[in-house]
Length: 254
Image (cartoon, rainbow, N blue to C red):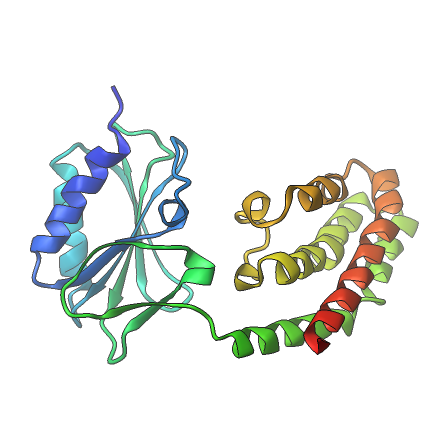
């Protein structure tokens, strides 16, 4: 019988809490939104003392190996330069891999934005080095205004980048351009309107973050099958982009 998620979580939490090098531990990802299921990975993050990333990673490996054999380990830096480890267990579902980010302690508290990451499950914080915060409304409004104007500046040009590939009968280029220059900004604008905290998440959590009436309208525009479909959907998506730009500008001005 495969190892269950809690059979991986519990020993890892216990090992990290007992280790002097680890100052705080929390779970985010699907767990912080209460949406974990049998296909969810296990997202942990920890604050560690300076120079103790490798020590904490080795303790995590040891805790997991006591439950079962580790099948694979991957490591990569995060976009903010911290260490991120992935462990797949031989006896667990391949979907239930452990995703563990280790962050060296900084002078200021590590800020977790609830609007972006939901409500993290904080297992311990030994030194008050975590701060769960809400984005400042004024800062959010300024960020959204800037994003709207960035998209608006090229909104009339971007359909041309798709149409030229349609006219050239280059389907792969047309599909790529349609997704990049039309669907991507459309989703960003919809997020700015309906879930501004996660305006940069693209399709992640999209069906949870947008109203069902919006996803029902968006889905057929995203799902394209051939050049004729792109040609038919391009003006509809472009018009929606223009409509959203105007709506968001009006909301910003009010």
